[in-house]
Length: 108
Image 1 (cartoon, rainbow, N blue to C red):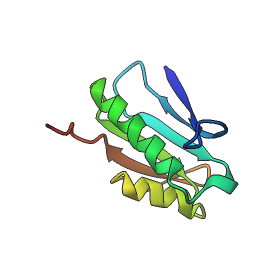
Image 2: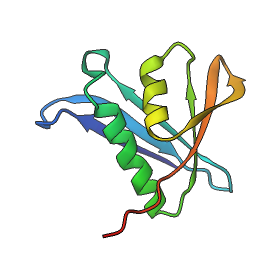
Image 3: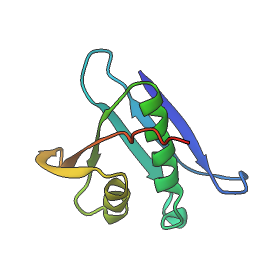
Image 4: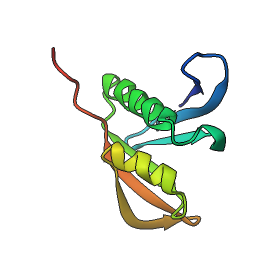
């Protein structure tokens, strides 16, 4: 099952990218991805959208997530780190597999 959400600027006028989750039908981690256009990178859109996606996944009972990130893509690595994901020693098609868990719900 795939879920895709378009990311827009703060004013909502223009799409700048997307986040997506591929939820397996069996047990296993959910694969997440984020893509933000280069002109809008560094403005927090990727982190904010990926954080919201992680929260929605947690609400659905999903805890384990993975992402594939190219070793030269520092912007995506920073987003993954801010999501408390960690790189593994696994490389698939030139991309490093990162693992993480969705955040515990906040109380109050």
